[in-house]
Length: 283
Image (cartoon, rainbow, N blue to C red; front, side, top):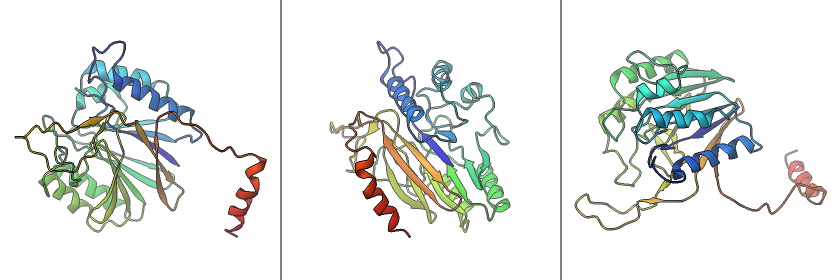
């Protein structure tokens, strides 16, 4: 099974741009690459900040573009989104008690848990006791099922100070408590930080998929709200999507940047001896 993930699309950041806003261009190119690529995903996860202002027009532009996608689509909310407008745009999206966009998918022996980390009006993450209890129930009822978790906010301090949470915020404690001892959880995959990041949380591998919208600058120096020091904050590095490959035993994640490149080698008869030799080594 292949699970594609796109995150932080931010449609509507500059709705008056002429002839078209950059974020819509980047999303169209990323989606087109995924559709035309040789790797056919079984589903597409959109892990939050699908829009920049949570408005209906932006969600309509997003879903109009997604009408080209031939796979099931599973959305999550980010801090720039609105639950109400997301659910209007994706009327079949499940919710849990309290209206949280939090739900489970079971496919090919894998449990996929989609977590809602939005607190409207707040940039940082949230994960209340009710959401944590739902996660606990899901994990306890599937103790032997390999599990993959998607969420928008990474519950870690990355070193990108203006984007990070505080140390050990309450919502991160709720999440850690729900995950404690749950060895069936293979990985956590997030968005929000607009950069490729790999770390661990509660002893579980955690990765951040880079954004479709422009990326956050790679700058780990301390930053002060009292000192606008003219550092770069946002860059035009290429948009990226992830492919999470599950073969029934192992979960492997690949990332592809969306930009123009040249093919330097094709698999023709001249390279067949090399391929044969590499396969022979496994015997």
